[in-house]
Amino acid sequence: MRHVPTLLARELGAFFLGPMAYIVLMAFQVIALLNFWELVDALSQPQREFSSIRDPMTTYVSSSPLFWFSILVAVPLLTMRLIAEERRTGTIETLLTLPVSEAEIVLSKWLAGVLMYLALLVPFALYLPFLYFQAKYYFDLGPLLSLGIGLSTMGMMFVAIGLLFSALTRNQIVAAVWTFVVLFLMVVLTLLLYFYGARQQAGWAEAIRFLAVYVQVRAFGQGQLDPRTIALHLSVCVFALYVTVKILETGRRR
Amino acid sequence: MIQVERLTKQYGSVRAIDKISFGVGQGEIVGLLGPNGAGKTTTMRILTTYLSATSGRAVLAGHDALDEPLAVRRKVGYLPENVPLYQEMRVKEYLRFRAKLKDVPRSRRRLAVSEVVSRCRLTDVEDRILGHLSRGFRQRVGLAEAMVHDPDILILDEPSSGLDPIQIREVRGLIEELGEKHTILLSTHIMSEVEAVCGRVIIIAGGRIAIDEKIEKLRLDKAILVEARGPAEPIRNVLLGIDGVNRVTITSQETGISGFELGTQGGRDVREAVCQKLTANGWTLRSLELKRSSLEERFVEAVTGDGADPSKVKAT
Image (cartoon, rainbow over all chains, first blue to last red; front, side, top):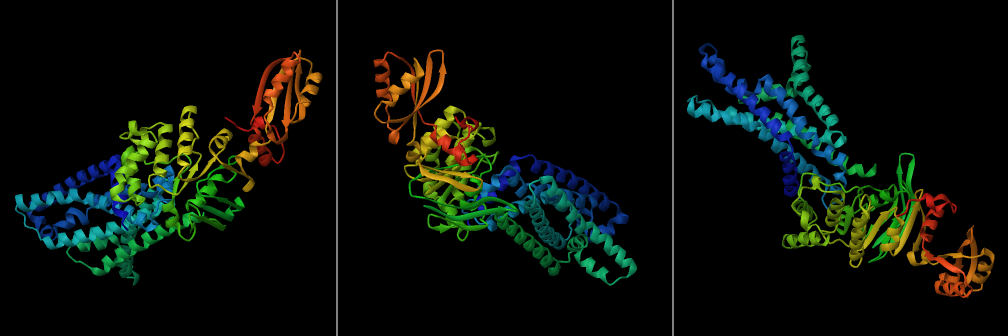
């Protein structure tokens, strides 16, 4: 595992030497601004204040459609090139003939993706000190922390899924589309299914509710740090990484 | 250094290489020759552990390519075809990055990188971005990268493809220089390159080894081409009289000028005797040359299965 820092540095370098990182970061900055605007607006209206005071993070991040939409678009954009690009340019051949194990390669690419994902959340965090210190709006820090943990484990899972699809193809667009479809199913379809099941009062509605990423993150935003959800995210993540390593290893047997 | 036994690679129903066996000794420079699609790249990819063989064994520097891929990768420097590089990195940065991944110890890394930079004559471009380099420089960066960890074995897939004649000569010189310390297996379809740098040649055709012989041995049956002003038949008889000549064929005959091809016993060089005999008889010698295309002929023979027209094969 001693090669991971070297590989990681090159992956991050590649992110920031291309335009993609800046475009996505800029977009997130704008979205964070809009959401923050909305949050301040909501807090300044006394009749809506009551619900927002309880969990401002929900309005700001976890139930904002704009936030979810941009996450669903940004994660595939960040992960699509990780392995597919190497396959397209042929550098995968130089990478896989190094005295470096496939696990090290996958791990460093995944870490690079996770770090980029976390960088996307920084714009959101940037505004919060203003709210806290300048506007003297002393919101609860607990839910903020729990939301941070929840979004991190969710991001780890999402990036691992994106990496898996990137390993399956040499075409970045194909990788991005597949990742988007799967993440979309995990976030939106589960939610719709849950609503549908709940209306029918079906027994499986509760199971779907547990799997719905949107519901999970909303719960984190409300301060419910559920270890089961964290375990779920991390298991999916580890599984996807394992499959990715196996894909690279069996690539030799083509 | 390299031992290959009954190596087979199957892509679906296509058999890319079929039970090939060969060995490469320490310090040898061996050329892997063959037409496109003969299985050269597949063989090299198996040796560098990028692909695994369907059956058979490949042992490099005492390690099995299938069982101990990491140990093999440590001993092998590989220049893939078309030299894939990270476009956004700078030359020196890239070499340092690769040296780190190839476990060159920190204390020697700077030295190792600057050594390969000067050896591959990259000093002028060491801070340029790889994506902006010309083909020749990219090739040299690839070579520098392959040898940065001072491997025992160098595997070079078409090291001179896409280069201009001067660059080819430079790369060739570099390979010869490297051959003093390393075991080298290189693939190419350029005959003169094999003749210039390799000690041995392995010709692959249709996934099988057609020829595996030392260059000197292949060179033995060389021919001498003679062109002189004078009647064809009498000249032929005189040439046959020269000591060591065992075969003379008339290759051309036009308006007083005749061409001949001489075969000699054991490849003896009888050019001086030919010159003396012709002038003594009053025939003007127009040209006299030693023909060294025998490798090319053997190649065509091996690939097509008969002694077809050698001019159909690309030769530089």
